[in-house]
Image (cartoon, rainbow, N blue to C red; front, top):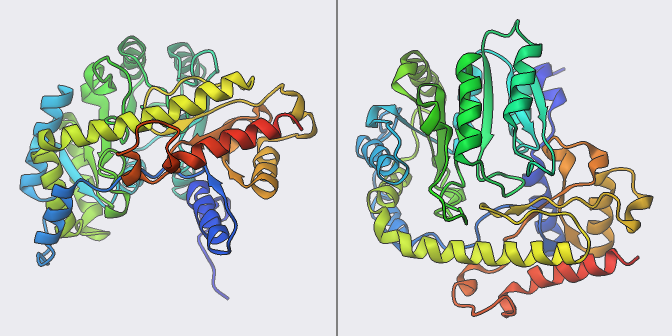
Length: 411
């Protein structure tokens, strides 16, 4: 009989990928489902990036484990120019998606994982696969579900025996669509520095921001202790390309050497054609920027439409500041008295009303908080770029989802 590593027994398949497969199967069977469960950018990959991929389809040789040298340089220069970071080319590591790089980093960095609740669905399962302790840090609707310095400091003072820990901050945030501001990050940075907390700043949505302020990052306030991760999937609408990156500060030379060892014994390198496509994305970023800004306008349009209508229906929900997500709370609404958990709520909406959302408990929220994660991207991206308003036919699933909830909340 086959024996498996026992760590896998406490991990379920990714909730986001599972619901996406379920909706695809339902649609193939002829059911119409409004899919607010999966966060994949619906826009075409910028044409210049597609051309670069095609042009380099014949590049079959292994590349250096840390990445194509020209790509490392382009990435570091991109972040120096647009984000004012200090990372150099040899601080850049290219991987098969930022998800894989985060897993490798969690494996290498000792100490428990600290997660604000809610956090993206894969952080905790990755830690469990590694038998790494996870500590959930409570947030509140009033604080826009962002980690407060007071909460982090309280955890540190209650756990003086912990000599090092890892904190993942995701901004703009999946599942809430909220962003950290410079003042909050400055306060968090001081606590992290004092208590030896290594920060993984997951900035996969940094380019999908709706605020007019300059992007705020822990890398600005705690550069020696912050690892930035990102990739092509969200801003460049290239999730299937599977290219991520990690920016590791020079002060973590030991970690950089260890990561190279792990890469050499696992994925070896990211596929060459995709790295050349990424080189086009970052080296010629300015030429792609008008298109990316056009995509972001549509992202904000759909998020604002859903959020304003939810509030009109009496649902608590903050306006999105970035990414493609909202996290409304249905707690206290009359129609919810028959539900005990957010999962029951989401199952009723899916099975009886053909509306797919994810329960907040999949992201670390209490099940009785009655939160749900909405992905605001169920539309044809190509057509949406040509649309004049939310009333255009390509946004029918966005409008229909609101009508489903309107009827549901009156039951």
